[in-house]
Length: 58
Image (tube, rainbow, N blue to C red):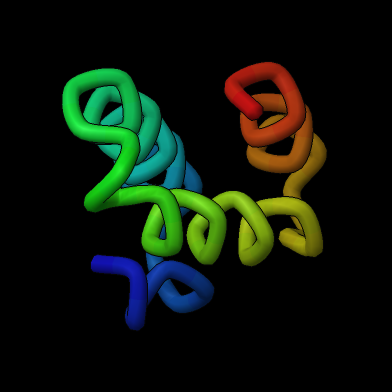
């Protein structure tokens, strides 16, 4: 999912961000780099809502 994040629809991107946040809460040590990667991709997304959601969850 992280690889295809830029190509996904907005709704799917939001679900990926939700999943990343949940994974980080459950196991921060193991998922830190993956979550950071997804949030960095979302930070530069063209959709305002996706950028705002990433900023909120970060």
